[in-house]
Length: 283
Ligand code: DGL
Image (cartoon, rainbow, N blue to C red):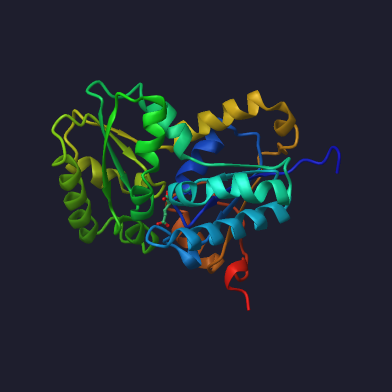
């Protein structure tokens, strides 16, 4: 065990985390990654705290059982609703030397360099917006920034069901962006606070005026992971580096392969995994 090395685990409710994973491949090409998408139970965005926590914990435990020492929740909803409990309550019991990191903190740390007006917009799932994670985290680092939020409950289902390029997508994207921009004229920066949303970028750009910067998280999170590994040699030396990737889904591997290859060019072997029944509802 002493010198054994393992892939870095990346988790999302579905396909969205692939937008983050693709940036990991660019930023950290030598590292091995396992990607786990809980496509069978996606979307998480409208689910309760307890459900998102239970599902996310199951996924983290699965990646741990595959050997991963470091797991990235490439999902804002899971980062908002489950990360803190897993870090504070579960990790000390499971294995205090392992780590689970999210996507909200690194995105928030980067935001200050984008806005001139100090008015930023956040688009996210219902769960992420209701959790207030972005305003709370932004306030800690940039108290001068005013955050305007809008939940976009239909955007993830559009992606998960391969409807993101259809006319139905235009309807919901225009509606939610107009709602966000009606909060405040001075918004000059919009964070896509859901890892699925970069897959809708073409259409988002159609409805966002050109002077507003649209920030997606993939590159920011990838740079932050690289920095984390530099600052934590004890974790870095446990990560295997053969440039290999494996994908796992709770749905059918054939469906995952078909849909995911549109989002991730470097898609390799895909296997089905079963996450079992969450502890709380076991009989
Ligand atoms: N990609 C997830 C996020 O970043 C989507 C959540 C969902 O399944 O609704 O929030």
